[in-house]
Length: 239
Image: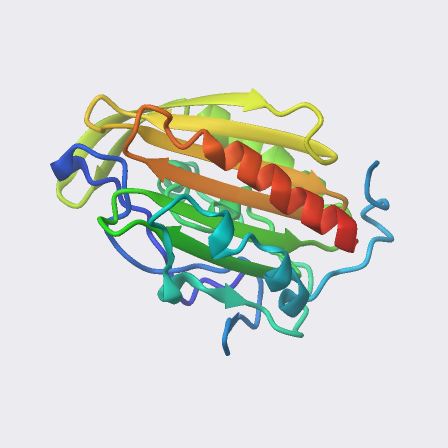
C-alpha cells in the first residue's frame, strides 16, 4: 500500500468539536498520482477500474453541503497504474488510530489495485467529508470488508491520544442492508467532542467505496451514508 503521505483526521478536542484540524493524505494503492496530476460481477472476474476512471465516479462539490470546498491536498488517484496484490498486517495497537485517517481501509491489511480519493471541508475546518473508491484483485474486496468489521468491533471503546490530548472514544457498528453487495457503517463519538463521525464502507463487486463524515453537529455525519450509497451506484454503473 502507498503510505507516502498520511492524511490524519484530527478531532478538534480543544474546541470541543469532531472536525478536521490537520493535514496529510494516504492512498491505499500503489503508484498514486495527484488528481490534476442488481450485483456486480464476481470479484475473480471483475475488471479493475483505473484510478483515472474512479476519480470521475467520486461525488462532485455540487453534492456537498453548503459551504464545503475541495481540500486540494487530499486529492489523489493511481492514474493508469495498477498495483499487484499486497498485504501489510496491522498491529492491533495501531488499528483504532488508523481509523482516523482518510484511507482507513488500511486497517484491513489489504492493499488495493487502484484508488481515487478526495475530501471536502467547511470554512471553519470543523466539518469534513472524505470519500474514496478502491478496486482489488481476486476476493480481496471481501477480505477488506471482513477486516473492517473486525476493526470496528476491536475499536468499540478505546482511548485516543493525539495533539497532546487524551479522550475516551466509543464506536458503534451496524450493517447497511441493500447497500451494494455488502455494506457497513460505524459512528464514533466522545464526551470530549461536539457531534461525531460516521464511517461507511460499501462493496460493489471487487470495489470498495468508503466515506467518512466528521460533523460538529448532533447528526454525527449521518448524511455520509446516503452520499456513500450514491458513490456506490456510480461504481455499479461503471462496472
